[in-house]
Amino acid sequence: MIPGRTREILEAAVTSGGLPAAALGVVNAAGQRATLVLGHAQLQPERRPLEEDFFFDLASLTKPLFTARHVLRAAEQGHLDLDDPVATHLPELGWMRDTPLKTRTLRQLMTHTAGLPAWVPLYTWGGAETIRARFMQEPWQMADPGQVVYSDLGYMLLGRVLERVFDRPLRDFELDYGLTFSPEANKSVATERCAWRERLLRGETHDENAAAQGGVAGHAGLFGTLGGVLHQAERLLRGGWLSPAAQAGALRVQAPGRTLAFVAAQPGWSGGSLSSPAAFGHTGFTGTGVWVDPAYGLAWTLLTNRVHPSRHNAFDIQGLRRAVGNTLLAGLGQPGQH
Image (cartoon, rainbow, N blue to C red; front, side):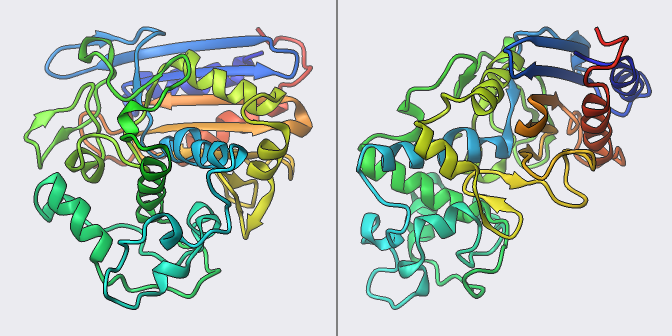
């Protein structure tokens, strides 16, 4: 199931020094799986080989695999509707102030069409409680609704909605096999030597804004093993990720280039140009990603630690992702797959 050319590309990326490590998992519509694990979980201060059960910082894969999925589960259970205004569940939002954010819907937050900014250095605001309080009262400069602006802030708000609806912090939510918010450091893949925290990060959230809020937020904080992320990919491909109605809704295109939970296949996207129009996926800043192509009956995840020991490198992670997707799809049914 993993073509020889795919292996060559990943081996070259690791042996050339472009990536410390790469873990690829592939699953087809029959449930057959194949995996490939290469390189080192850590290069500094000493080298540690990558093992298949190590946890990767999934970064923005938190958005679809945790936050969007649990919002849809809340809809399944009748706790909310996707077209509820945000203020329905967070009445303290913009307290004593008229802000358009109050009327933006959960659907708009999920599809990045609510008009919130992409990113703000919340970790410079102070401690976790200060950040949480100020976030709800900040007079955000909003873009027009409907315009796609990929926003961590929107998913932070969705995380707050989940905490309110289920009456517990995100860290206490039940997670599937191979996913966690609290990995053991010695079973985790190293990310960056963080300039803000002044230490190498291993088993703690790379994302500064999530770290400043206790390590978990609606946009980042989830960790996963290769097997755990591949399990999510398989359920997305074969069904069972949500109820049939909710899963169909999660994967339906809702805005230009966006489903409720994922990025839809489009020119230049990370899944490669050979993907079918039905394909979807998502990536994470640390070098992670998951893709599903129902038309070809294939799903795959590529997990890397491309930010180790620093995010400031010239490696073309998007080019690698596209090459992997294209060679996997091109190799379907061809002799020599193994």
